[in-house]
Length: 414
Image 1 (tube, one colour):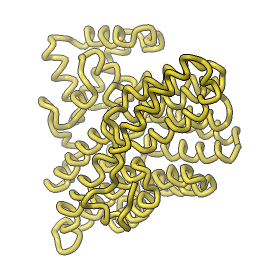
Image 2: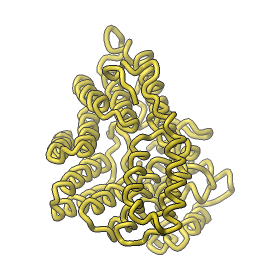
Image 3: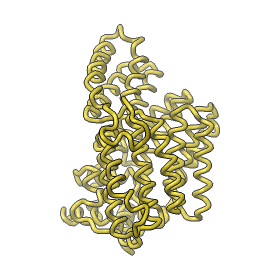
Image 4: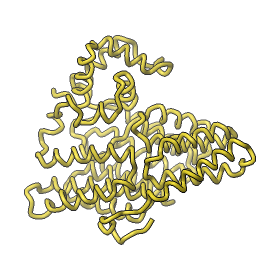
């Protein structure tokens, strides 16, 4: 059994530090600090490390990814990037992939890593350019066949998310619909289900909660029909449906789906998982649960889930951490903890100075409106002044599209 790339990288780093599995287990426990009380006992943790490194477990949870990063003193991008020195190709995952597929997968991993830190506004034109230059010519008349359509679907979904991040939701909707069609031609049903989850997210964002639930359920049905285990993808779809029910005010159905999503996420992944679908992990689930609780007015629960999401995100997950802190700030305001809310907001500002995400900035604007009622307090007035300055400075980041703006539909202005 071949070990996945991340496992090869972890084993190489462990050996470079002259750590055996027992010392590695101790380092992980030290990295967890006070939050390590619920870790398994030492021998069980050692056995888990050996299973991870041998490839018997093909997915590593977000919590343990974070602990390994802390233990090794490395960023998530450096430790888990498949292009990192010392990593080896995962033969089980890549044996059926052509050299072109591998090139596309490596490009996608690079784009995803950059997008997490700098946002879609900076990268949209770059990824559209890759689609036009490297992928589109292979769709017709090339030798890649269905694989080219699958790659095109994956990159088209990616630029849909980048358009959404830059505040261009109509363009994002067009990209997602096109990606779904391309995935259908390519025959990747798992990728289709994943794209339906993205469409569900956008529908809820646009106020179409019924559509959000319908699209998520369509995705889970499609996934079930593949008759293979894809717990991360199924958990994501269940979470999307839960968020739709939160908007509809159905707290019972929302809670039930979130419990199912958590239980599902802990199951073992099938080796046949689509390599094109974006990741979904414990941090993402915690963030979406926090958002759902906030919508339902369950503010203490929203605070708890948001805190969990923040703790599960390394420093290179800039946008994700920002979203979690924004939810935390909203919940803190609702609980009357204004000073703490200002601190959370200032943390978002500091972390996102180089992030081109209109979604983040709009949520900061919404937070500003809620804090305005408390401006007479000195800490609030000072915090709002910092926010106003930051928002003015960021306006230049949203010159939408560049030379490729026409690729996603009509030319757009920010």
